[in-house]
Length: 467
Image (cartoon, rainbow, N blue to C red; front, side, top):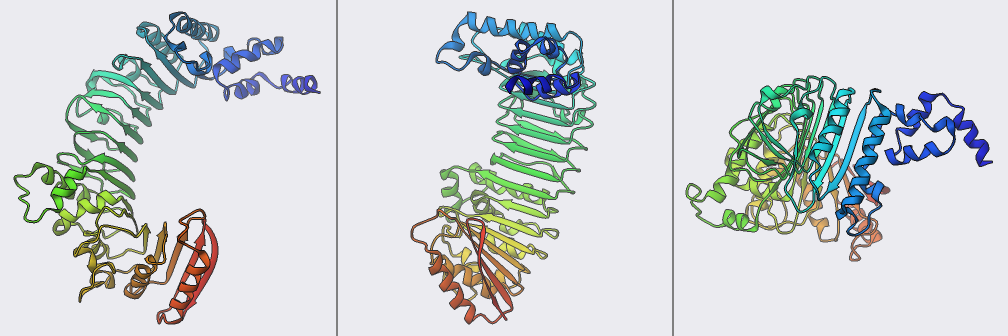
């Protein structure tokens, strides 16, 4: 029966078989040559090469240190490339870990792929117990590259004039030491997606400037940043607070996710009374976040982390008005404050949906203007003018948090719908029937026309409607 099935597969056209083999690792594709004569030369025409030394070597402790093993792997790559000759190639993925200097060999493999018109190049090259692998500048000269992904390599000083990638749409740099001038990204005329993860810059003053860029993801990239990206629609920023943000241009931004990374010392100093911002560099750095917020003020969907919400407490007086914002997601943590929340809600005149991922936060006098934590005369003052129609509460844990939800329902004058999400395997303090009873009792005395839905594990549980 197995032979019969193999017979059917082998009767398929060469193009179809090569397409099937392109979904396998190169080692697996090479092994198919032993099936029968029909499969022997198919590897020569496979358009996608996925070469991973961990698949070839089978991970064993210390095996990657052996010169003979690594030499065997490199010879395998040489044979595959020689077998394919000059046949066109679409994707070349290379994951190679070595303790020895193999730069000449690797450079030859990359040159081979580029010469054959590769459109997607994915390189992970790790030198054990050494510095970054120094990547040849050849990777930045290609008429055909559409996607370039680099991991754990070093790009020596590269000026915009050294770059020729007219078709490149996606650039992903992960754990890369990047030494380029400020015009580097501008030299990529077709770039639409840029991912910068743990990039070490040669210059502390970094400029990401590109007129065509649509999505930008930045994580753990230290330095001073200027962002000149007028066509950007998606911005994900998870980063230690930069020294400054001299330029932030994102007038067409649609969605932004901001997760600032701060130290406990920065938070303590920011909360200290009567602090002199001018003389405190750590706090002044936090205040400069206002420039970043002004740059994203046209955004329609905004997601802020607990640290970001805390840092924004130092920018309340200069908080921009988010005239286009329709959906705001705020993540909370018991050690981070909501001081900025009252101003943030007041400065979103067209907000339709508010998502609160967690309700526990560090209690201060200022957060009382929005929440129910502090008893004061103008409690809820900032919430009353907010036009929110839909409130979503995620990560609901205890009945005590129900008081905060009730507070929001009472003060949000335009609220029509409240959704409460309970994790299926959440806290033992919580019992769904108990929460259900509290909501039912609350809705009996609720005077506005609104509804509350309870969802457990993402699935609908029950709905209450008040008229």
